[in-house]
Length: 281
Figure 1: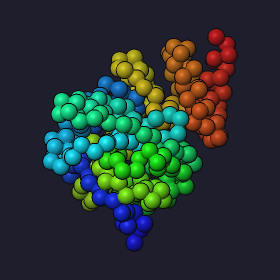
Figure 2 (figure 1 turned 135 degrees about the vertical axis):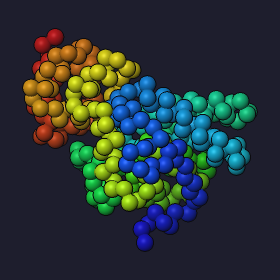
Figure 3 (figure 1 turned 60 degrees about the vertical axis):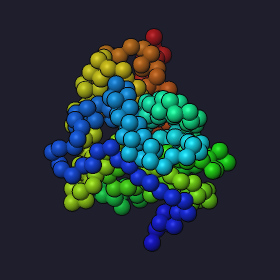
């Protein structure tokens, strides 16, 4: 029996979409792929929709006015895509609370030190867990005590992220009521976990699609898109960088440094190319 099964608090779960098919998801796969690679336009759409679903199906049924804290998935320096979804979820939820005379929400961060650069979209549940459990996760226990906690993530495939959160809460000896909220969840367990990889790359195949998002949408850096860019083949990376504004290049470089991506040899060539470009302008 794993330690998360002994969590002392109450756990509620809500997913806006339940994936029970490899072809129909309830949302557009290409849209989700753009969201995972920096589209804030889609993040806004998803955040609003998740807030509407959560307030209608969960919060309206048994909310007593207790303080609410919203937390997106853990990150170090560069946020994940779900962070931007969380921003719009919080806006919509605050509107709901204000209209009913309740206090607006507070926010907190799950701090994370990352020990890998792998994309686990193709991995099994245990492979994901064994990869991620080497990371360090931390929250401010004193700030969270006695509050209703809303943990947001964009998709639940194997439950690895949830296991990590519950282990972290146990380690901090917390017993809050927690809602685990997802834009989508794989509910048909006969579908292999690598369905996530199909969704992640339904639109984005490489740097050309990233450039299209930058040029045509409100773009925000997240961990996935930064790693995809840094992982680009030399010639394709150089061509991509030549198309970008200098501020984009600076932002990409300093975010990558802040997330300590210089520790991974695979990224060093392109990091140095960014540094040279900044130095020459």
